Amino acid sequence: MAVLLQVSVISGTHDQFDELDDRVGQAMEEAGGPPPGLMSHVVYPDGDGFVVADVWRTESEGSSFVDDVLRPLLAELHLKAGETTARPVWSFARP
Image (cartoon, rainbow, N blue to C red; front, side):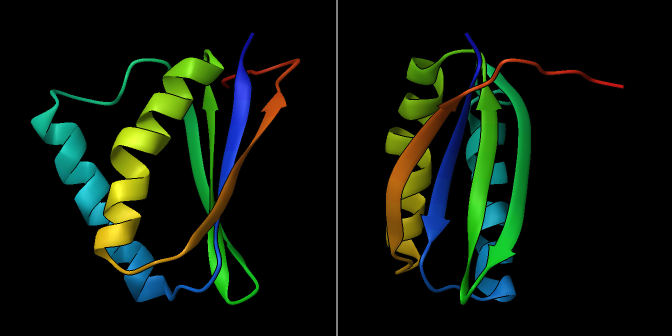
């Protein structure tokens, strides 16, 4: 079953997000493309920070990416992230 994983970054500017986005893109390029299982990606502002919200085919695929790629990059940029939340996705459509 697909899952929505969300990681809240407690305090972060748009410029810090742009730097994170560049580093995630570089990591994906070095890995040969997007991570297996990634279906959708969105980032939105939230309070003084932002939320990274991705839909994954499985929770294990998404959790691996969050733990092995996203969280280390956040740490390199001195950004503090909350716990990862997971929610089941009942429906997912692409136009």
